[in-house]
Length: 347
Image 1 (cartoon, rainbow, N blue to C red):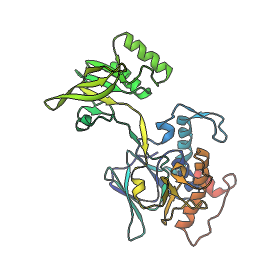
Image 2 (image 1 turned 45 degrees about the horizontal axis):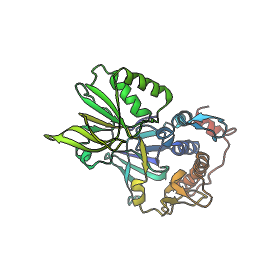
Image 3 (image 1 turned 60 degrees about the vertical axis):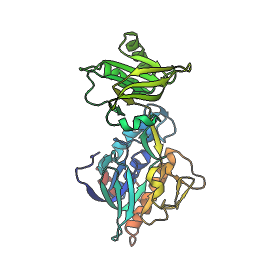
Image 4 (image 1 turned 180 degrees about the horizontal axis):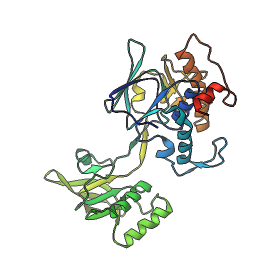
C-alpha cells in the first residue's frame, strides 16, 4: 500500500477515515466500481483493532475462513485491495472536517496534512487508537524528554524503566538487553506479578531476569523525583502498601492502546449514544457526501461484527457511486462474470 507522499495537501474521490478491516474492505468495494480512495488512520500501519488489540488472537466468524488471527485477516485484506493501490496516510488523526464552497470536503490532520474529497467514509471503529499513559501529572512535563512510548535512539549509560505487562512491554525489555550499546539497567514495572504476554515471551523474560539482565518490580508509579529539571527517580507504591524509589533516566510507557472517539463527535454529525446515525440503504449520514460504516455507527439491529461491516461497505459503495454520479444508473455486476471488474482487478 503506497504511503503518504510529502505533499501537504491531496485530493481524491473518497477519503476513508480508519484503516481497519471495514476501511480496507471499503477500498475493495469502491475499487470494483472504479472509485479511487485514500485511507487515513492514527496508527502507523493499517489494521485497526485487528492489529492493535488482537493481532495474534483467533477469529472464527469470517466467511470462508474457519480460523485466522487478526494479523492474518489484515494481510488477506491488504492483498485483496492491492489492485487498487490506495494511498495510506498513517500516523494522522483527522481533527477537522468542513465543506468548501466548491462542495469538496476538506479534512485536516493533527500533523498539518490536508485532504480534499468529494465523499468521506468514516470507518473509525470504536475510535482512534492512542497510547495509554500513566496518570501521573508530574510526568506530563517530561514527555518527549525522558518519558516516551517508543525507545529513543540514545540509551547508552541510561537506567531505563519500562511500564507494562503485554507483549510489547516484554519485547521492549528483551530488545534493550540485546542492544549493541546497552543501557546501565533495564527494569520492568507492573502492578502485579502476573504478566499478560505470550508464554514464550514470558519464558525468555524469566531467563533474562534470572541472568540479572532485567529487574522485575511490582508496584504503581505515584510520583517522580526531579533534580535540576531532570527526573532521577520514580516513586511507586508496592502491592504491600509500602513506598519505594527506583532510579530512572528514561521511562518507556507500554500500556497498550486505548480507543477514543475523539474529534468525530465535534463534526456536527447526528449521533446517538456516541454512534453515528445512518440511512441503512446507503449508509449515508445526514450530511450529503459523508458516509459511515462499522462499529462507529448505530441503527436498529446493528451488530458489531466484522461481517456486518463488510456488508455495510458493499452497500455504502453503491450509495457513494450514485452520489458521485447522480445522473447515471449504477450497474450491478458479479465479480465472477464481469469483464469490467476483471480488468480492474487485473485478472
